[in-house]
Image 1 (cartoon, rainbow, N blue to C red):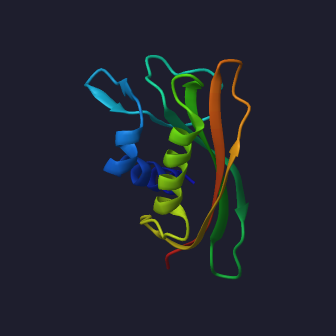
Image 2: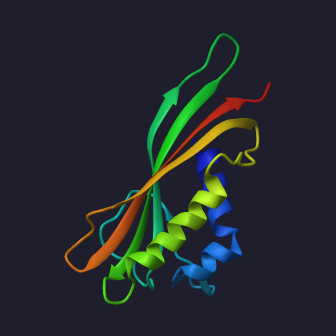
Length: 147
């Protein structure tokens, strides 16, 4: 569901409090907050300054009834903090709590769809690599196609 994925990205990227907590990456036109949409990755995107968020759609289930298109979608959000000596779990916890404020039980604005439920689970410690710390969260929402 590209429209839900875009709304999720726009919500995270549009919050100044969250983006101030994140590192940046250069898109060629200047620095942008390190928020990535795509396959969960286990290496630092180059060039990126920690911490960063990567989110990925992990399930999309049809949940409609006669004459009503509905979807239940789940995303994994990985908050990567780099080497433990640089970014501690408290910093990642602050980022996770801000994500919860933005998404938990909040209806995102999605063109052509109405969101009826959204839940954020976690964070839990995530295996990342030998030198980095990370937290993982799950975001689940249900949307209905506008008629």
